[in-house]
Image 1: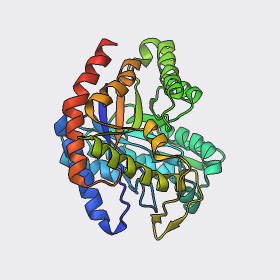
Image 2 (image 1 turned 30 degrees about the vertical axis):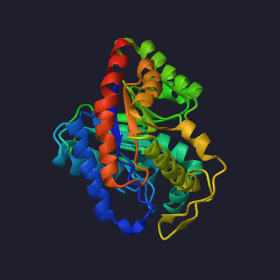
Image 3 (image 1 turned 180 degrees about the horizontal axis):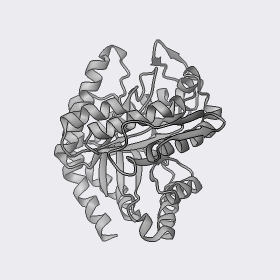
Image 4 (image 1 turned 60 degrees about the horizontal axis):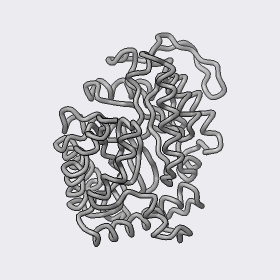
Length: 344
């Protein structure tokens, strides 16, 4: 099992500023490469101070200039917000400028607040995403593409330049429900997923759906992989565990506001709202603990056959604490998880 660091771009104090925010992300990516992580994932969100990265492709190109081997995964590029005739060329250009290290993670969008204000209501994003993905693949793999669909209608055209990576840059689809995971796997896509609340039965069903679909495909599916995103933070003490769980509770008071809640945002700052879930209940769904406990909790993930764990760990803590936690995970946890994975 490989590790991937999620550059989650969360800053509860908006006076921190975009320059410091993105400089921190670059520093974390460089640390991830030095510590042996396989890659980093780059979110896309707009208008808010939660997961804020307006252009993950721009960030991927920047990180390619600062690192040598890291895989650069978008997590995820929101297709319903874009015109695929323009985006296809941007993806190809980013693939070239990153020397083929780009993995294009794509999805339909998650926050009703930003989707609505950007003219693509979440209620219609599934249908728009499905057609957008088909158009994007056609534009990257074929020349002289025309289209007559519900959301796209255009005369024959060819996106230039043509892809460096053949037949196109690697595509990874964000999907949570097990039938959707199986269907996307059969189509030849890598998978990004998460159980969100961390329910073990959902996690197991997600992995099983991917593995069963791969098995049906035989050799054609052997290269496909599944990445699992979780809140993971390796603490140095029980006191730090308590601090980080509290930070996580504060983070989710904003996250829930734009994910499932009313979307109350003031000048780009997502307002924290009261939560019905207690801190103790939240802690059970997150992996915030010291190394020994973390090994026990993540062993099932490694044994189940997750190819890559995406560690989402930015909860508003100081940058120095963040880098130290990355070091602890890489030295005290990751080598043992790889042993479990290899044995399985």
